[in-house]
Length: 186
Image (cartoon, helix red, strand yellow):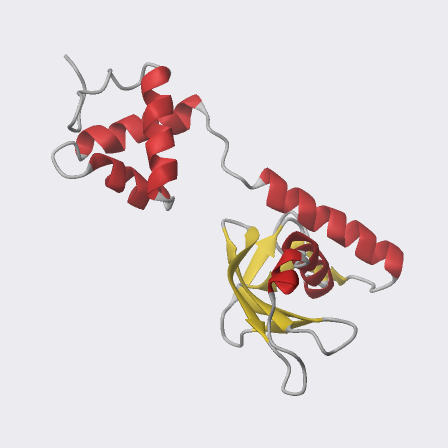
């Protein structure tokens, strides 16, 4: 059983051609009701529903949370299913609410496919323009942790920012690195 709970007063966001709350929770309870329940705290960021936190809790009369419960967690399926049920209004290209979505199986299947496409297509593409921006941010912060500045600027993990910096060097937007410190060889 999947239940979607919007966070009141969080505002609305457009996801693909659907309108949904900016923050919401997807609750999943296993069929047998003895296993743990899952809560996925969701946030719409850059037009994409993203899972920001997962909580696993045992039921009062159920067993404890076990390793096997984590192995069977189907986060992507739950996100797609929850978002397809939750995004119940379509939005026109001008941004006006058009119509409520029917909750019949065929309509939900189409909605789920739309959510999957939005989540997949919304992932950042590593383009030359992105790598140019990485080089600019890196150079502007070369005296004070430039890779951390890239991570902060793009909202990415430090490891991902390091990848961006390496790709910017390989693409020729940044010069070769100086061993043991930030910067570029002249």
